[in-house]
Image (cartoon, rainbow, N blue to C red):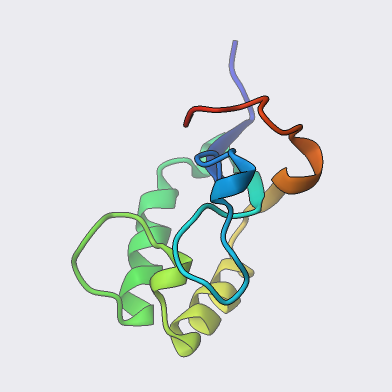
Length: 114
């Protein structure tokens, strides 16, 4: 069966569900209070263009070498602006589900990573 869309899915914030290990505001270390699962959705006909789009975003933002991924937190403000402005022009759609782990996870429910 042929699909007309494909989704590239990633998560952030799954490790460190122990409330005692959450980041303290203004502090260092610990895990985020947030868990997110996001998807970038493209038409199947554009599937092979995604790598070229990523490369153009990296080159245009001045990000050289390194990993194939673009990590937003590693970009300067002008680089973030460039990436966001150019992503908005591409035939992509995004969706995200976010939850605050401090509100949703009862103490002691998750005691190990992953």
